[in-house]
Length: 240
Length: 217
Picture 1 (tube, rainbow over the protein chains, first blue to last red):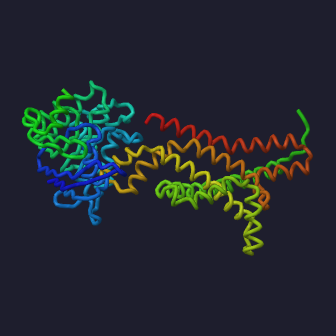
Picture 2: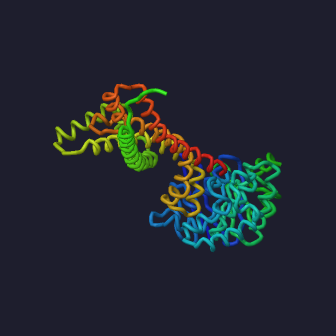
Picture 3: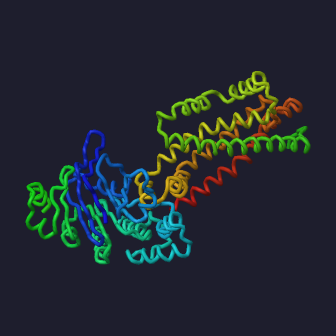
């Protein structure tokens, strides 16, 4: 379970998170929508401790992420994150990209790590690209590789930060299909996205962020069908 | 074709000088690179403000001519500190620091060239700072820095000609000794130059080979 309690976060004078409260249960898929600068991506990087927070608390399975005593390297093993820019390791092959963390962080043997990596890469449809370098892959393929790389650590949670935003339109579908598949398999996911159809189809709940505040959260039918907050109405009208 | 007084023994004498050039260069580049990596990482990690004193010292090594550094270091260590050090030791020490000052800049540039987002991805997989450095940053930074580093190593090899001022008989000094004796300056300088070329060429080619090998990534 991920518990976000009254989290505040500023970059200099700009307060990007103004007291966020959100609890995500095991097996739940929560998508976060909202305009740019609404703080939704920042929230994800706070959840796995890549960004510090100013006040409030984030608990993952009861462990406080930003407590001094927390071993973040350990905690991050169970929180996978995939970014807008897929961030392939360009000097490693696809297979090596995926096996690196299991081998070095989890201390897995080469054969075991490769077996897991192959399985995950097949899962995302890259089973035939194992020895290819990332520069030879399309953006969509690199993004799916990044997903496999995160999954190879067997995380309990997956965070997706606008993973289709940097892709050519014709490549968006293949990545969203991968996310859908994960959701159907019961992965606990928080997805920041601009893909409204995707949010509607796969989420248990959709949250709308506006200027650092979670203006509204609810089931997708409710949020898209009958938005309560005036800002949600405005936003949904503008993206339709 | 033409007459020369150069004997096989003279050529062996030159080869010994070349050996000294290689030795001084190899030691200085090895130590200088190790120090340079450390200095470069420290500069990136701790930021410009905290590392200003280090940067200042390195700037001195980069801006004062090597010849002056060698003479002053030799005089300071021998006359002020009264240390009984060989010219060879002083030469390697000064040249190592000189190399490290340039290398630190190259390393810093290489590390800066690794996108922050790539490092963030590494950390998000649970890698520690050290693992990120070792498996992601250093391999990528090396690819960026290699051409400059090869240039530095070749430069240090040629600059090592100056260590004759601390009584180290390397390749150029050996050539000069022969010139004084045989009075065939142009011919001997050509031979000396050829020796320098033979030393440089493999290193330059090796660099080219690595670049080519990495280019398919």
